[in-house]
Image (cartoon, rainbow, N blue to C red; front, side, top):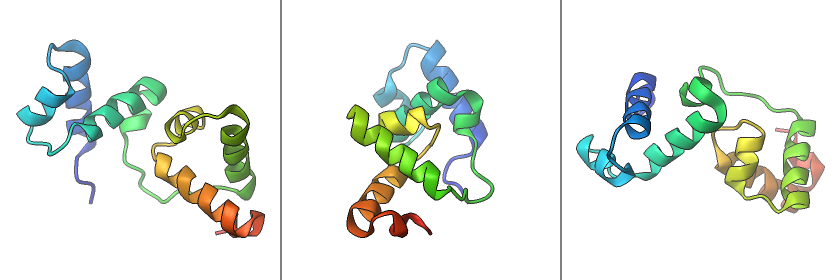
Length: 113
């Protein structure tokens, strides 16, 4: 089960965008140990809309080509993991980090999982 519900995320993102509290004070108000999740939710909302705040019901399977396109974009543009995740509409920049690490260690064959 997800730690925070979709409704909760929407509530906090809306409050951040339309209210007068910053990340730190909102996190404190709602007893979130760090402001980082709130920052991630706002970023996801800004780049993907409501879709960015939804929990994935099923683990997404990405093609080798999609993973390669993502890695090549990052290598050619110098984009960060977060910028690359935004570009490819991924909620989890650490996924790209894992693909990059696997690619560097095992080549294309390693991306076939």
